Image 1 (cartoon, rainbow, N blue to C red):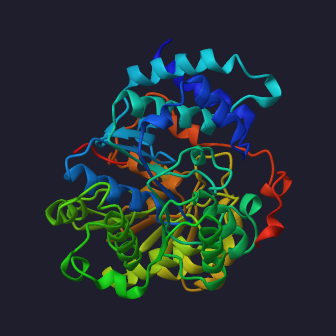
Image 2 (cartoon, rainbow, N blue to C red; image 1 turned 90 degrees about the vertical axis):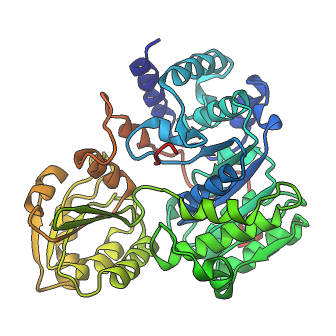
Length: 444
């Protein structure tokens, strides 16, 4: 098998959609020798900020001298971004080997119970991290938590960043319903931490912690200014990142009896954290480009707040592309007032929102703006080339495409971004569990 063939095989697993549930993943992991039993994890769930939180945790524990695995999704350009050890991507050779090993295990499944793409790569990652003898794995959920494939692990700590509306089709239409799914990562007796502030969501998380006799730490605004955050300038801009950092600090201190971390390692990890596509600022001569993967209404609000803080009242051009399974109307309403020139582009995804649909919302939110419909992101970047401040946002998929076009991250011979495409077998309401009970990184 060649690397392109391995990627093509992973791409073919899209046929099986997204089946939320743990039975297949437990079975596949068992066939693989239960590698999760040889590893220690910090499990991270939440609506926004999961990736940044994982990057901060990884950086701190790596600075402390540990060999740290990092599992995140989606990838911006290359599949290897999803599976890293000490911020080095899994190699193409290891991807080929791991895929071949998974193919052998998949013969044990009937066609109607075949594992999905995410279930397969979850077990691939577990096997790889075990082979690499990782001291700790920073483990990000895919969708939700309760029935997400990553939930087959028992972590040292369960971390929930925040609860906002996103993936409503699968997780529910209220914050309480979504919190119920995210709180599913809380395990019996395992410490849990959250920066959630929404009362309905927080109540659900507290109930889950009580049911599991899991000690719960709830972050407050005061925690965002405690030392060393009171004097530390984070490389990741935005007030929301200070919340993420406070949650990370609380997690590290919660686990200090299990994994000691010095103050120097803690500060080094935070000062050097790198997570691309999250309010990433590039200087190109006299031009400034800001890329942010805001992909839901809450993310759009965070982007707007960060922009108003760091680039107040500066004229800008906005390149916007949004997926159609997101609340594109709410996002457009938030983002359109940020620019005097709005360039609407399709995302290179079968799930893109047609730019034409965004026009009336953007016009209503910003009647004075010039609005152009572009056939592609390439065209949008060309039309926005003369703007002194260029904003690119609306989707992580879109940001990955932009980074490739701008030469920020190297492209791949084949379009590995297409691996981010997925379907789903149905909402969580279709599962036997009744909801009504509670309702990229660069190598160092």
